[in-house]
Length: 437
Image (cartoon, rainbow, N blue to C red):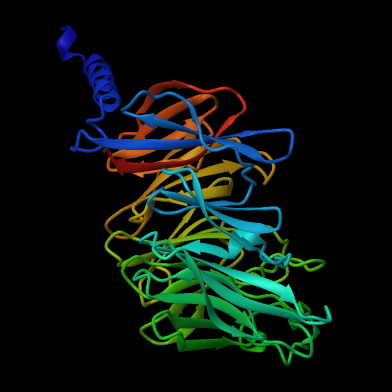
């Protein structure tokens, strides 16, 4: 009777899976694979120390070089490098050797983008790009330039330096092209442009030739963009792994200006920008989370705001479009609370997020899956609050909840304790799978 009870069978399987995970078998078939997890610990200077734990090894908490890591940090996709800001500089640090590869003047960052919008790694981890702003000699005009750091040569390259303001650069999937937002200058800066003069552009640049290959212009009067907002530009650029379409938002945070934010997508096949949302005069808590499905057939837009397509729709949820057919959605799935933050799996088939009644009160986490038809299916909406700095593995998600490190199995949603207890002041910063030596 004992072995006929499904509950006990499930408990046995969970225990067996835990043993396999801690021995390194469940992460990959390669027993030499390692999962490196980085934590921060705040100190009295306002920065943070960096610590490393390696699963499938000693699992000891090892301090990395004694430097202050600020709140703005950017791990390379392969987990071997981290870029961070501090002392008005941008630092690039190699984690394996604990050496600084470069330190460069960071300039200043406009309030409507912030540094978190202006730094990006290439998918192959071989390059980093950031947009630097600086004043001219008379402090009367702001200049902008794109700088690319090459890991192999450890040298910086200036890309397309001119008077236009460029921000939020990203590498396209092939790591050979850059996409970025550009806003024209009227007199000394974009904020002196009238609405009629305002022109926003999305540019694509070839890194080998340093030439612009495509420019997509957007004038506020040509779209349903709130009148009275004098200046802003695109932000949150994201592209699919296997296509050239680019999703982005308008109206990044700006001093003294409410965030009337809309969601857009560049349909690269037709060479046109499509406006996905039109919400009119509502509050400023409008956020979007977008991704492409694993088969690249669908584009999924997670949203928070009042009435995305009309007054009969909920304020929070997910909308699906067929790639290349962005005029009419195929699915709309409402959620019952605000989506405070969210992380998509690399291939776009799962999403993990945090929900709550308002933006300052996180209550729980949710997990969803994109089915074969492109519809967002909510698998669980009552999980404990999970850190979104974890790492996606083949059959789960490794993350922190409270002072525990866990693995959330997918699609079964079993929570496996990794037996790694953390001090209360340790916070998960990043998690990466790497081949063992």
